[in-house]
Image (cartoon, rainbow, N blue to C red; front, side, top):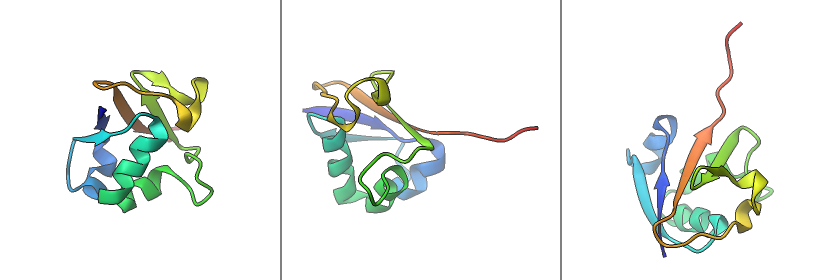
Length: 92
C-alpha cells in the first residue's frame, strides 16, 4: 500500500532533499522500516535506539497523532499520509 510521508524542512537534508517520500507499508512502523532502507539517518532522528519514537518528534497519520491511536502499530491504507513533525521550542 502506497503511503505518502511528509518530510519537514529541517529533516529534508537527511532525505536527499525530498519534501515527500512514498513508502509501501500497512502500519506506521512499517513506514519507518521502509524509510530506514533508503534514509537510515532520517529514521535515526525519528526513532531512538530503543525503537520508540523520540519524545521531541510527533508522527501524524492522516492528521491524527499516533500517540492517541495505536502508536507504531497504527494501521494505514493506500493513499494515507504520515507527517513527521519535530517539536519546536524556544522563546522567552
